[in-house]
Amino acid sequence: MNAGDGRLHAEARGEIVEDDGVLVIRRIEVTYHLRAPAEKRSVIERVLDVHADHCPVARTLRGCVEIATGLELEEEG
Picture 1: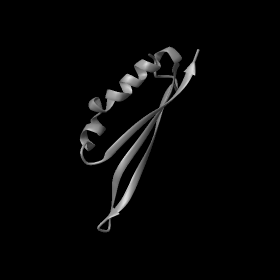
Picture 2: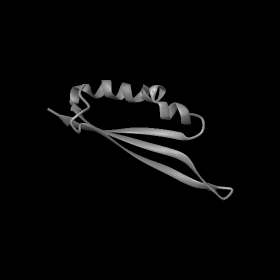
Picture 3: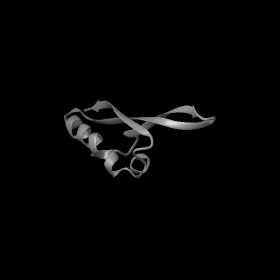
Picture 4: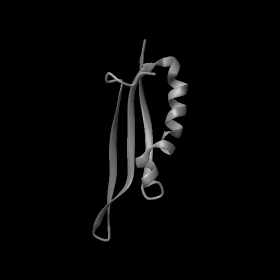
């Protein structure tokens, strides 16, 4: 599936709290926006379920910062 040509972008938000006078990141929420054929939804959702295991950032932060992911699929032709 082609994710180029503006078909994929992501938004990330962090939850920052104060811990003993220091600001720390407690949670990161990433929402992927993808334009793809409707019939690919099940494949896309399976990939989303396992992608953190192959993401260098997610693997680095695992156990330290909670990471949640979501998908907004814009169905195309």
